[in-house]
Image (cartoon, rainbow, N blue to C red; front, side):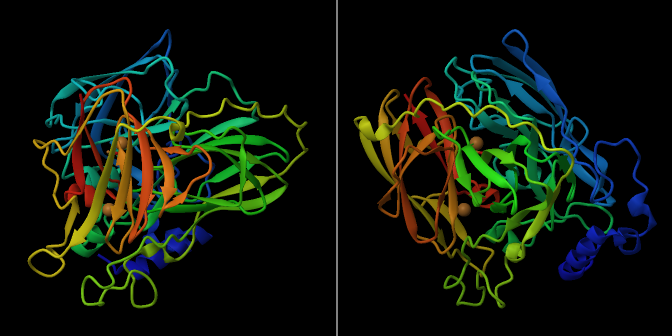
Length: 492
Ligand code: C2O
Ligand code: CU
Ligand code: CU
């Protein structure tokens, strides 16, 4: 294994067309016609799109180890149906999604449909299931007719191996179409992920320290490609659906020189598109974004996000950031893709129709208030014994941590007593953000992953509608989740 720094350099040089020198002749010998870009700078490719017809989408997803061209070399990754990301599943509200999940991995896995408002019971969005190697399991998800349109995703959720399996490449996008379509020149799906591979193309196991911080891969990929190229004409309006499928990395996204407007985050939608200079997707978040192009070239960049560290937890020896604290590799911006805009200008498109105002739980009665605490502590032994808990406890699938009355609205104050950020994710039911550190949010903001900053708190409301059953809430820094920062909720 070459030292991380020189590998990072090597990869950066690769971006300048020196990949062959750095990684050797094999690096450029990837098969032509592959949907994986063998070299950086290739045109963006998109995963296959599978659409529902007549209210049903029936798909088979095979999870297996694969050898694929990756970032100028070759790598052995995990993928659904032959590579990463898996196919994009495109649905309408009211549809049924049936997935036969075939496990060709050497260990147990399962499937979670992140953000979908569907039942957690039986063969639905049930994270307590395990699909053993060699087995195939038939999942069925029924979207209610009023299911929110938006960008969702699927990934494994087998406790203990979630970070490894997602880092390895098991993820794909789900789109629930809008009843009212938005006039655009073209749509793109951008699944952003990160991964680290060694010289032989094997996935690198993160150190215990990296796992405690939440691992960040050295390669940041868009649809499995490193730094692909996108082409458009001036005054085009593009709709980008961006998934942050990174295991722990937060993405502060910028596209300087181009106009960005957010339609929404996760299943939430703003009444009017919101002009933004940049926005942050924590791990697990998605953006529904309009890009109105201007002639020239622009870089889609992910800027560093300070998500805290372990300062003060380990005698000050590991700073989160700064010269002494190299725990996160995201201290430099990463260029995810290049957008080239040239040619004759398009005729402007009709305006984006306004949307109905989102439901606002601030106007609804709250049945129950809860306080939930995310904490980190020192276990026995240096570092290795760091504990990640919710309300002082580690995940136990047989314990019910919150019993909720189905059909009621609850208010949760989620407190983070640790020096590191933890993004809270609740399955099945979306959350309305009410306040950050006691400061009220002024308009309805719906998300299914909400960052709880270090030594801070957030207040949320949730309407436990439509479904009963057991599900989970957890930190979406997936190394933390695997180490026990997850708990069980039952709606009854
Ligand atoms: Cu993205 Cu519980 O998962
Ligand atoms: Cu989820
Ligand atoms: Cu965490």
